[in-house]
Image (cartoon, rainbow, N blue to C red):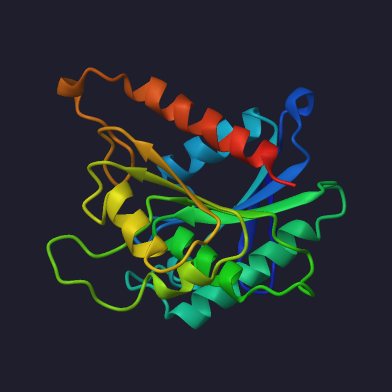
Length: 227
């Protein structure tokens, strides 16, 4: 990981890609609602993708930088995300042809907001979106807000990695909500036995490290096949 570079709203941290496995791609990776860019989930996936040849940039949303517990409203989050993308993609020594955006939970949802609003004239263009644990609905409560309509309008290739035990909604629930009456370019990667952070039960007989690597391999392969 290289030193942070300051943008107008946030500090972007880079994870250099493995040169011998370079996929010529940059992934701007946003954190979830409850933890910032240095949370173990974020650093482990950022390092894992970098080891597979993908340049990764992480950042903190304004409320996290300011040590507030409540996330900013969506327009503020979206603006910070755009600024982080601009700072990361504008790095002079970073030569990549493809740009991907995404994040953990809330970060992934905001990435889909940006992708749904993107146009052919946007620069740099987005090659794809990756959401790790899409927060379809808050656990143990009635669904609040509209978290699916924009998904139906996506034209950018999107990968949603979703645990089958995710209390925010499992793979089938996400697919049903996103594909209801529409055919967006969304692929869903189920994580069997995984929760919102893809943790699996020991009783299920699956090794956590193996699950982690399977997800990373699948995401890297998905990035590789995008134009």
